[in-house]
Length: 281
Image (cartoon, rainbow, N blue to C red; front, side):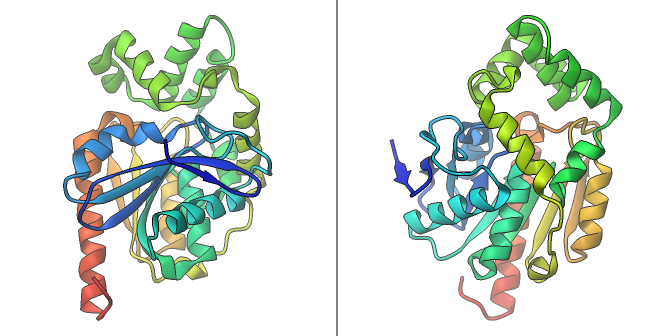
């Protein structure tokens, strides 16, 4: 099991794929790196992929330091160092989208492109703009037996069509594979990540302006309001904005073919732009 020991955290990471563009994938609040498995299985034949559990989540224990967007961005940068990757395409989902943006601020020369999925440019906006449907599901996730809480998380994360396709048994199993243990009971690490979202208030978008960027959102996201993607697009005018009709926050779990295809096309476009500018392949 690959482990990276840092001064204030221990990180579990993994990788797949032997050829093609290098891609680091970063997860959201309470989610484990294994939540990328469906995308990994579709891209590993043509990309070099890496992912990790954020500090304090899943197998990334013990946690000895703070939980902040900047600290998690530095963790992701440390994973790149551990892999020996001078640069990579960065893909972040939800909180992970904020983390990869922060990494790009810390080390823009190490970022070939950004893919910002179901996310925002300012963490606090997630809390301030949650859709009413999401608030209702969040409340239901706070009461009752574990199964009913996981089903409420499914309602918060996925469209009705996606939940119907999966069925309740597979839905709960998928969520349990993708999130940390006891996620629906809001363990301390999830509360700390939520606090990190709230503390993220004044992002500087200037260092990101020259980076090829994809913004990908489900049109019916009940967690991160899809209108926040418009705000992100306004801050990053070079970005391409893609909305998936009828899809929710968890598109990386439910729309695997479409998400993987969109990511692959974005990465290929960014590689092409780099060659046009005379950069290294």
